[in-house]
Length: 377
Image (cartoon, rainbow, N blue to C red; front, top):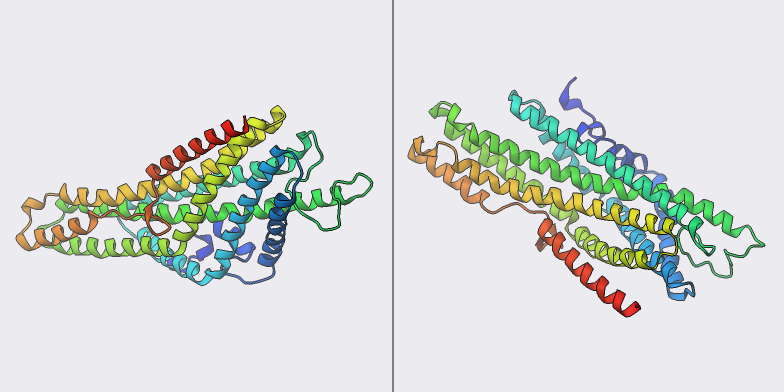
């Protein structure tokens, strides 16, 4: 197989992510499917907020509707962002494709092994996210069945229509429509997460390739060492450009999701206290596991990129630099100085996305939840 003729959508490291996005026409194609997927979600999201404002239902259903409204907003924002910045995402993916093929063409067995490990990890994470998204969709549809009142999977305001009236078929009709919409929303929400995770994993792969190259300097003849270091400097520039491009695409959305995750976590913790049945408690816990796992994967891979980029400087220092000539040592010193500033995925263009930031958010969520529990009690 000619690697350079590889279809971008069929790149192994992305798994089925790009195929799903192409099917729903978010990337690489432009047709009616994206509007079929997004328009109902935008409409129902607007009605959700109206329904919350006018709601006279019990507190547990209001809280659950707030959670779903925030989740829908996050889903819609992801879909709109993909449509608006479609060209930027496609150009970025093409750049990743070029770098990926270059690594696949390497004759270094260790680099090929790193590529294979990263590809398998990306595919595994993508499958787990899709599985959890599917379970969450099932939870959306089954939650009302275990309630003590008649409710729809998603709260929505319909002027002049009483969707809960027993003498009309409105409830059953809207229930079926919302059940069909659940997997469509999953195809907007989960593939985007998988896409960002794959981008970050590829950045980690580039860091590990650089570390391997630097640790292998002692195996080279001295006349080739400086040329190899210059290659590493150029590759580090490519890596920095890749991270900068990722931040340009996603940093503001990461801030929105950072706030949404905090809001949804508070709502779900409170919902767990006031759940009326064991079945509802189980479903709420499933919601919590889903959104936490989704965020934890994003923050953990971003955290790994942060430290792997810093390890480039360590790998350079651990080479046998004292045996190099003065010019080569100066060149290596330049690389060490550049890589001592870790590369970071940013939240809102300011805060590095790492596990420390996630821990701070969880502490704030628990403090706010404790306050809500005391007020409600």
